[in-house]
Amino acid sequence: MKSKKDIYILGIESSCDETAASVVKNGREIVSDVVLSQIDIHRLYGGVVPEIASRNHVEVVDMVVEKALSDANMTLTDIDAVAVTYGAGLVGALLVGVSYAKGLCQASGLPLIAVNHIEGHICANYLTYPDLNPPYVCLLTSGGHTAIVNVLDYDRYDVICSTVDDAVGEAFDKVARVLGLPYPGGPRIDRLAQEGQPIYGFHSVVTSNGNFSYSGLKTAVINLLHNAEQKGEQLSKADVAASFTHAAIDGLISRLSDVVKETGATTVAVAGGVGANSYLREQLTRFNAQGKRVCLPKLSLCGDNAAMIASRGYYMYLKNEFANLSLNACPTLRLRGDKPKR
Ligand code: KG4
Ligand code: ZN
Image 1: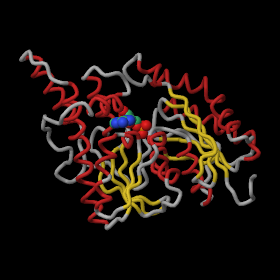
Image 2: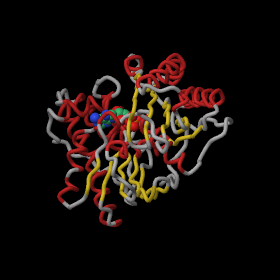
Image 3: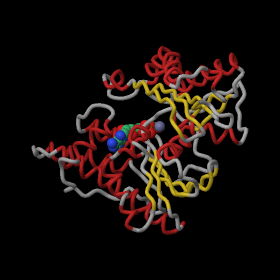
Image 4: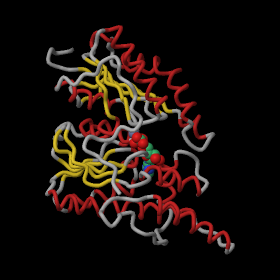
């Protein structure tokens, strides 16, 4: 039964290779959550092919949104606003969701909300922990972004440090490729690493000014494999995966530790696809021993989904932050307050 004060947001997400739609109540409660992944299609090419992603979004977006509404046992008349990802992501893929959402709003008269995908990832925490409120420190680890963010309020972020080159998820995918593992590499490396030992040392991913750099780590793994090949040695892929994982994650945890001390934060959260990594999740629990609250979004909410977009949309709805129908996709959108670091 819908009470008057409840706000239902329909979220739509199509920034990369997942077409997703979801209905979320009051920013916190998932009423329906549909995610249609294109992974099987892109695996054939070893990575996401932007043109193919856009075409597939076009084919299924209508069906995915219909299913999210029918799973929620709702029609558009029960919805208060449509929230859509407008960046960051692949421009053609984003445009499918944006155009579809604009069409829905034009036809129904519902307000349109333009959501930043990265802010959406952070909101995955509100869906897993309904009592979580800012401030807290969030480790943002996706395929396109890596940063430590002081979340001061629902719409105020202090980006404390971020990557100067590749994102951590990108590094997982690239290293998986050189190890001959199928796309997407992150979950494959995660599983393989659990069978190996971190016997190879790599340089820290933390730069001298406290940001992150992943391009050197990727090259170091490639060099290790090439040198072994030239010497006719057979390396254990599991040991390489474990060594890479430790190097990729340990730097994040050590910087997070500094930031938690500096800010005096009492809560630590994680967001983004790499937040599903088992070693990362295990390492984050060490903050519990320091009396901190550790928030780990449900695995299904770490990767791309529309529930997190609807959650972010709810907080924008409360502030009347509506978009107009000239909304365009913004593929290079950054988190508010983030600036490129060198
Ligand atoms: O947040 P996300 O779904 O998409 C972006 O917004 O980028 O992140 C996708 C990234 C991919 O690079 C994928 O390989 C990585 O998250 N990933 C993982 C794991 N699951 C997904 N990386 C490491 N371990 C995992 N278990
Ligand atoms: Zn994402």
